[in-house]
Image 1 (spheres, rainbow, N blue to C red):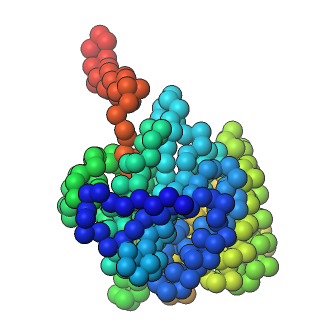
Image 2 (cartoon, one colour):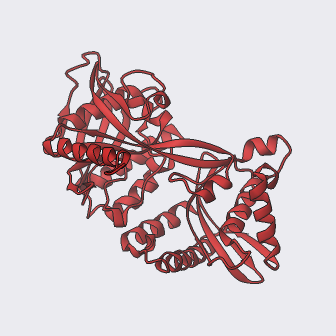
Image 3 (cartoon, rainbow, N blue to C red):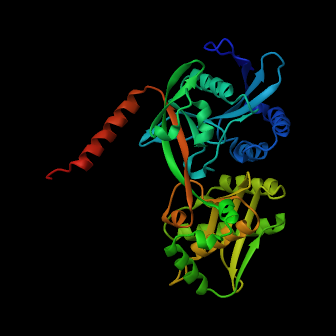
Length: 397
């Protein structure tokens, strides 16, 4: 066990310790006890999510645990999984990376964590984050460290001041004790969502809150189908059945356009099978199936966090003529979530026209990276700047 004390903040009340991946069982026992003490935590930093990820990826992605305790009482106040990226690249460059939370997998296997956050007792967030930054900065042999899939509010605890990160869209200063450790480069992705709670409070319904062109498309698509049936999985058996059908639909859709699809990865499948067995009985994961005259149009996998339904994955039949199965399935799933009292239907990051048209709200999810000074980064940035200039001023114009 290695102990690291802050040399920048003498008044630190916490101490950071590291433990190897082999200590998983004992660390996860502590994780569960702390989670019980805190109460509801974000799904991506819960013990169930973390254990499922470690089962699927732990033998592939090198990792260790960081624990933070009160200096005087030795009481545990926070735990963090730190991983070493596998097959990570920046453009054509292979790079060595560190990641906070369940991240760092090869792209083809990636679970693509979103709404990532620190797992820490309330009131200790900033000091915990400062210690984590100090630890990451102390690791040698790595090109950069990453904060993957953080909402702005959860990213803010890492920053040197309370500046609204929306005001600085490309870089932010990250805190390391009482000094600035450097800048975080930000990649922002819009997360479109539908505000079910406000719609419910105003006495309106989902369809009436959509833009007029989308309402017409929804109505036209619904009219093109026969008798519609919406099933919300309420048992492990029905969820498992819908998950199998979702995978088949998803793979068929992407394979038809020459793409491998998410479920070409055995590790990705194992991760979600494990999550399903853990989260469905706890009502933290759900599956929805929409059928027309007994034939499945599509299936949706939802993660449930803080009474928000997060659309993690889906599978639809191909569109034909006036039929838009994706629009119908998402609209009916949103309406089902509305009826069940959820506050929001969140399409998660990486915007598409489909997501924009079926949403009435939006915020950012951020992938942040702290790059260390490297000649290869300087050379790559120079090449990228030249390419941008050439696009702006093409030869002969």
